[in-house]
Image (cartoon, rainbow, N blue to C red; front, side):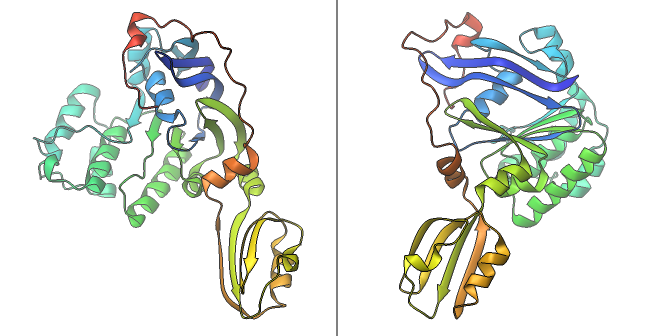
Amino acid sequence: MSAIETTGLTKYYGDTRGIDDLSFSVAEGEVFGFLGPNGAGKTTTIRTLLGFVAPTGGSATLLGRDVTDEAALVEAKRHVGYLPSNPGLDEGVTGRRLIRYHAALKGDERSDELLERFDPPVEREVGDYSTGNKQKLALVLAFMHDPDLVIMDEPTSGLDPLMQERLYEFIEDERSRGTTFFFSSHVLSEVRKVCDRVGIVRDGRLVAMEDVEELLDRSGKRVRVAVEEALDPADFEIAGVHDLDAGDGDASFMFTGEYDALLDHLREYTVRDLEIEEAPLEDVFMKFYDHAPAERPASSPPTETAASAGGETDV
């Protein structure tokens, strides 16, 4: 059984497309990255999977239960943890009281362990928390009932680099215990750290499904180099160099070739500075997915049910 499965999943807000014809599955025990720029439809997908909005078309299951069947979805969500991108926490109570409230709703198997790991200031009122502390408390709430599946929407938002690394280590530990993750992000580097496979969404449509290493091999690296000598663009006509901008001793380009060949080439110069980094997500899309998906026919989008007509338009 797949932990998540969608077939033609579609959500329109009136005439505004949220997601369109999404079909994918997430295997049990997998860390699946749902990757795309802001506004691509990631949050709408999550909200539809969790039953916060009803789909306009298609179908989806969560832990084998139909997300449009209220009773089945309630049962599925007993085994699901959810970390929203902007946790809406009651700011008039302490973190400790909020944990007790959630424990009464869904149980508490491991809050003590999670508090030790993430260390939110639970004796203070949530309204006094920084963004990072709110995110740490939200992590405790998402995992305290020991869910089988965790859906995370931009989970490192607001976390400092040290806490981000702690979260990555925690996800790795949880994966070894068999927990399934659906991990929405627009940050390619963090997807690389934790995900097995990624689905890439743009303009509400799934444009690719990749193993993480395959995606990174295809996207290459952004290289910036400064040398003592003057540079001519012809100097960097070597295999794997794309989108070159060179002159006056500086060059920047995307590189998808062999790094030994690049380093051999740079030995011909007196290098003052060299920077190699992951390709920005926008560059990945421009390079590999720059063909617009097929447009929807000119007819109106599917008619929404009364249950799906409302909801957010933050797509």
